[in-house]
Length: 306
Image (cartoon, rainbow, N blue to C red; front, side, top):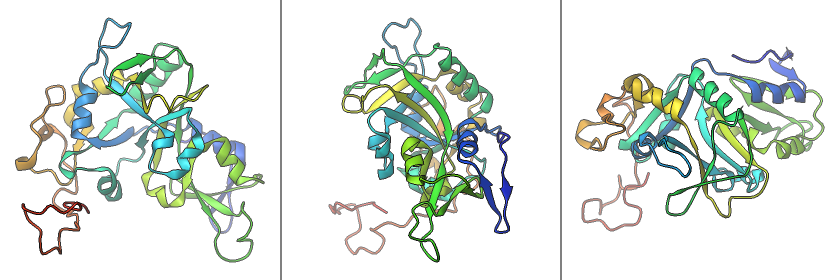
């Protein structure tokens, strides 16, 4: 459900849009088919295990958000030490690039779907101050934070600066890619300044296959030096997974019964998860494939790496 924002298409099929309307689209869009999260089976088991937290009588299922300065995209460091986020994606189609990049170890790869109703209801509860935020200490224990954090649920747009042809030296000449379309900002005279102002909204175009949605907490002061992660009770979205496990969990394309983890997620086995459409079709290459010393006795530090 894209918000109604005005734009027109030029002869090159580029969407011409104002900066304000573009930011509005990224920060108010709602995905009726749900929000997808690719993770490991061991992580899902932890997410589904209720945790006792300080000052609460009822244990909660928790979602962890990582400090932006520790993410794999160096540009995320623009967010500073006040920003934490957890990544989701929109679009129901399985993405092989996402499986191969984030489904590690392969046998533990799972894809979750959070329905839009439960996600938006959780967002409303957070904004109504019904949900606390906890710093995660080095030993894994939660510590209640008194700091206020602004919540954003945002889509990411991907910047591609013009590299060839006329105007290539102009830092503002380029396009943003989002949801299959190309957007040209009609009134932006400082693209780099825009990306500094909203650092968690933008990435380089090489990441556009991710179709990323970010659940962002923006604090008023730096916290990343003390807490690498923060956590929030995420009961409603995770409870729906417990209720309809096979509907909302998909096992990775490398799933095999003989290598399946024996652990359970809230009593559920990985075998109960929905089957990937690509099961049996994805064989990852490894540096071991062409090594003469490949075998159980190998002590190479690159053993098993892709």
